[in-house]
Amino acid sequence: AAEPIEGTWKRPNGTLIRYAGSGGKFCGTVMTGEYKGKSIGCMEGKGAEYKGSVNKLDEGKTYKGKATVKGNSLALAGCVMGGMICKTENLTRQ
Image (tube, rainbow, N blue to C red; front, top):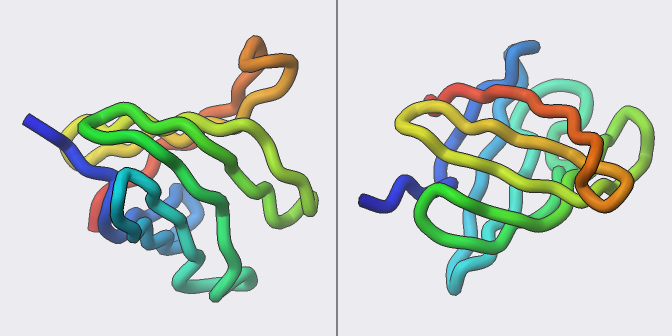
């Protein structure tokens, strides 16, 4: 069964992110907090696996990204060195 990335997700710091899109491309927008209205990047994929870009807004940098959806949990990672080093944050579906 597909576990789509679409929807609203809560970061550990309480910020809400909404992923929306169509045709296999989904973009995330910050819904609350300091960066409200800003894009956190776009992902492509279907089911539980997605790849794309992640914007680290507080650094002003964009990283290669990947996301995995499992039930009401979203593991969102930004990676460097061709994906060898990744920092992952776990978000909860709202």
